[in-house]
Image 1 (tube, rainbow over the protein chains, first blue to last red):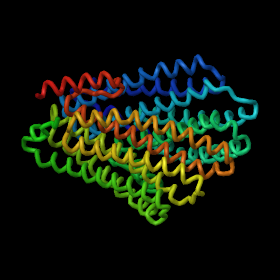
Image 2 (cartoon, each protein chain N blue to C red):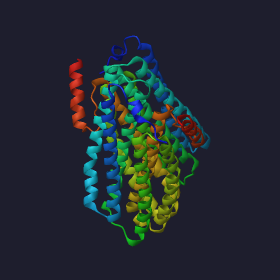
Image 3 (cartoon, one colour):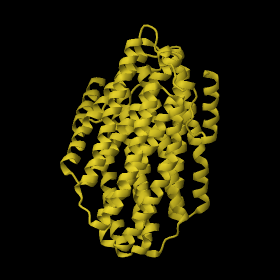
Image 4 (tube, rainbow over the protein chains, first blue to last red):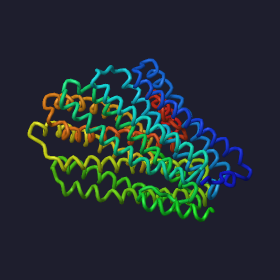
Length: 241
Length: 241
């Protein structure tokens, strides 16, 4: 179900809100590209690409600061109410999570600077798979944000449980590896951090999904159980029909 | 230098802003208590206290949601401008970081459920020291927030570099330990996570320090170098004299 975003941004500051929304989508696109480049750099052991990811992080930071200022200016000048205010708040929170996802991508890129033995490559393959899963989650939640699609946001929200299970499994595998080859520990710890970073990105995508749901239905669902969230989105689906 | 907070919360919604500020301080007090209890639980290997920390986390979450709603209501009803708006924004961001600090305290408390050998106790002592350092940082930044004291906020901001160095040193020590006693890896990994949690709490205290500086001088200093921040705070100090 797609929410009619235009209804919410009518009125005289239509254009301003539309602009800031577009900036968020550009920022989201950049962060997605940063994450994918970091994953590519790791899988191809490409130190040049990894360095590019690290250098480009300042662009993500600059976009966050700029959009944050836009949000503050809109609140101060336009004094938005109801759903317009919820949109500005959802945007302000979303960009904070996007910026942190950018930081995690930078951390992941670091792993591309290490070189791994054939045995260790097996660990890398699993991390890459988890990486693609998380990258898809980011793509989907940005899509949900672009359309303010609460159903899609809910699906991303559920997806995080799978990422968490993947995280547990890979962490166990890595620990076993370290126990069998203790000399590799310092290098393998870099893999531990990158798996942790991926797990955190999943959490942040889940946060963004919550902001979309908050914007559409006006309810803060943080710290709410999955079942209760499901009930809420069903109610929204019915009432919007 | 103490900033005159009263100047900023004059006007008809004085009381509302004062109330929400007090709620933030209560929330900060609770989070500080959670962190200290988690550290006590670890150092005394006290599973009951650890469980209490885990159970009390919902209170932190509930306070965040409630204060967040207060902020949204104030923006919608009172349409604050200039420094009043900056205060509301600084509050909304501060409580998000406090909530995450609560989550990290919960993670740290988990370590209290493990039991450690005499050798491993040495690692614990260093983690405890780092914990007290971070706890002091949290205390100081809450104090800076309460007084809107930009000088104090700046000192906390600088403190984070020390915590980061401590983190690096302890992580190296833990890795050496794991290499010497690979069978201990699964248990020692819990220590790795708790050191990481402490490092993250340091980052979040630094964030809160930035919000205080943002509120007082109206400038967003995120992603700004330490030297540049120092220049800014010196300018503020001079202009307020």
